[in-house]
Length: 112
Length: 406
Image 1 (cartoon, rainbow over the protein chains, first blue to last red):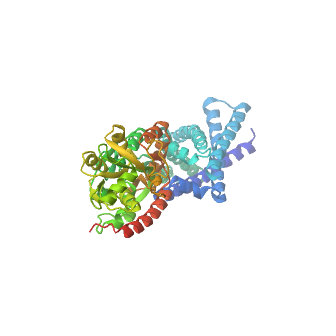
Image 2: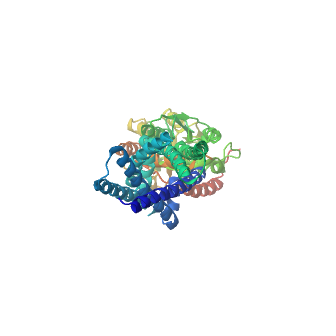
Image 3: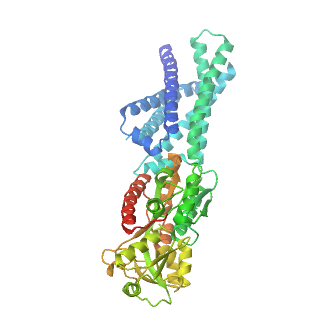
């Protein structure tokens, strides 16, 4: 893997970490507001259904996870297990697709 | 530094395993039409609760390491300053997350101990029977005992007052008959509870018609014969009921009024005692809930003359509708769950959904059928609207019939 790709992955890892940090804070604030405000699950779902803003936010959340997790695991697999062949990247792309699919499925369940 | 990186990696691996499982389970729970119910059941699973806590802790650990790594790479701080800043940031986040999840866990974790249903009548009446049947099923669902506490007196007012004063923590719920919530306020000049301000609706559990009964050795064989006897001896016939303003009182008043006769009411502390009095010959008749009377009718101690449903009632074959003698006559009783005002909306929602689930079981439906009761299980909003409409109805009826207790 060339330096440029390494650099791109490094940047993507840090950038997605920053996005995730922000998303966790927003998600946390939402949970506190919803639960402390006495909203029931039915009321929460009523508010999230059809809301483009929340759909966009949680899509970004899932996208950040999809980027962050495989890159992190890539380093772990390479350094700890010595697995550096192209098959590693293929498996990680597959993992990213599965996480993305499951995440979006959950989001669609909440918002549609 | 190496320890931080190691912990960061290990927590990252664990999160990479947990998150897809979490997404998958959430996605599964939110599929289909009954998704809200399945979502609530999902969040109530011990494994889900445990995984949520695990994710929170792992996130806090992972972010601590992550923040420190970012600071090492981007900020020219000294090592101990970076460590301190990372620990402070992660601690603040962990406290926030734990605070939020503890709120969720508070509602999800209910009930952690036994729940008491205050029934405002003595044992043996339809309210008590309904509460015990649904209470038994909810005990199975919640894994916590539902304790039935009978507090009879003042047409349900004694039990209502005690329930109204209970802490709104979900561990005391009130199981009244309809009249306690919709009629008493029009009958009693002084009340130690306010049905509208002290309680919030949860769900109407069951409803059913009443039955006009006399003692087995009474001379009356039909509704018409009883009416004729009451006409022939104005003010001599008596009817027992569960207390002033109770459903059985109002049902009997409704019958007497529709028949255009004069009979004297005899209040008891509950439906059960009123039927004991009727069997013993202390009163002439009663218009009582089928659930309370069906055992007496089956054993031949009471004779059923007519039912208050529009047509003949399947559980009492051969007993005609009173409407055949008095066209248009109809009366229905109901029994439900309300909670002290201030009870968490999540708990109310859970009680409603679990009661609905209990009522959906074939075994429960069969037992209710035998008792002459029909399952309802409506939403808190629907129950509130129905109570409002019934309150207005009883206000008019009580005013017209001049039923009053000073």
